[in-house]
Length: 110
Image (cartoon, rainbow, N blue to C red; front, top):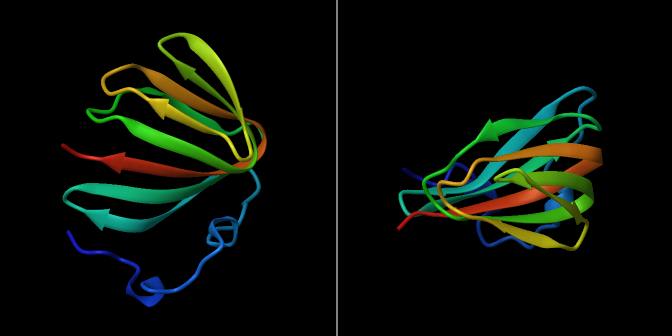
């Protein structure tokens, strides 16, 4: 797997400007994609989300704008701009936009 964003390598970036909100949608942009992990920026319109699922690796979520509710194994967590949350591997989790929000999702495969 190769990085799909050669044009931004070595550039100073503002994560919140890498992706725009779209009404009624969840939008994503993969920034780094390697065999060892990925970094993806997401933008969620208010009320949008990702249904419950699991992942085989721990994942770090950093909210860069807005507010989300992340439910991990049935326990809700409000996460706001400037905050992070680690979602443990193999635990069911879901995300929902309390208000429009953007996040960086970092997954490292081991």
